[in-house]
Image (spheres, each protein chain N blue to C red):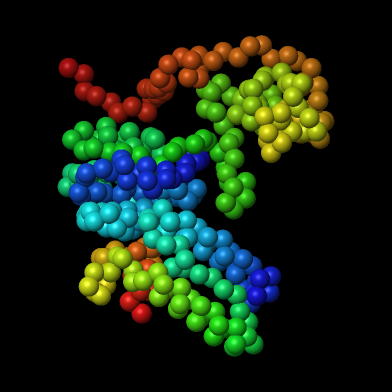
Length: 227
Length: 95
């Protein structure tokens, strides 16, 4: 899922600026699970903003609403009226949610309340870790289900590098060496021979190097009447 | 007491959450000392009185909640108990 964390309140207040009627919009999917922008966080953020602005002598009308997903038009339609009535929408969705609101409501001003961090998993309660870099050309079948693109600090395809020490990355002792993890797993699975084959340089055109990405599935598109 | 909670790790969890609330209060611009957590057992009556008296003195020194207006507490029309910090604070202050 998408992992995000809230911006500092001071930064959010600066983004809200002079807007008088503010709608804090939570999202019920990824950012709810990572406790950054769900219904509870939207209510706390709205309360915090009301109190903080009031302490500044600035009484604003700040309400909150949460939709199931900010990244699909049909869910955004649910709060269309509230969005249109607001001077400003503070989205607690990920960067996709913010852009979806901006695109779906071109007359409304929307600002982000979160910093979208990465694609990952909760490894334990209160801890989230990156797992996927969305490179567009998955190599997990060669690496025992451990991603060297997202989890090796150098995204090496033929690791480890010389900076791997005691199973940890030279970037930080808190980071497990992905290639140590890959070796250990392949060893445990009796598949070490997989490592004998060198991977050629990765084609990064499926990642950000190819520009903005888009997938079109003609079989899923709605049929349009031909003129 | 820490490590000896009727709800197992409940008071340890509560302490971390109180720290988070203190962070939020600081960001909002309120004094973080307006919320305190103390650990007591049911056999510590004297300490209970001491700590409550200390808390009262602290609150008196901090003064009234600046969000109160002429002693009237306005509860917003949001659902209570859904992470609404303002409601919780205002209700506490109203007591």
